[in-house]
Length: 219
Image (cartoon, rainbow, N blue to C red; front, side, top):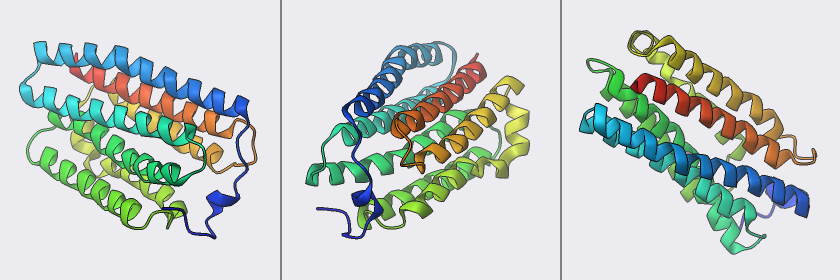
């Protein structure tokens, strides 16, 4: 189980020990923050919100830990068949994290919008995962665009979302999305030293902003 022989990832320079260490630290800090923050958020939801909101936040938490967990496993594993298997899960879990973040916001919406937005983001995530699993190593550059488009698909419900969320939450969601997009520049800048750690740092900051947005909306 390997990447296609011509795949650009096989031509990418190997990271130095210091770069791997820095990347591992970023992942560890993100996971540690999640271990501390999510139980508090879920406990608060259990005390103040309905079971539907709690379930939505549980899905959100699962997406967070799946994404960072598989990312850590993939990025720390030396080149091997196992690494390329983990790569499928790593890239797939990004879709789960994006859809999970939307799921955390959906309970605040009224009418049919929770169902519409939920169907759109989870269908998009399922299609993205299908491509990653069935066609590993194919369309990787296109997948970057797919992640961004899925992340911003919420603009179709900008009216209901604006009406339902506190302005602080709304701006934190936008800031997180922009931070993620800005980080993509470092993701593709493969010759930059510590590029992987910097990219994952942007992802961690964006995830933190989105967590703050969800937490503010819950209060």
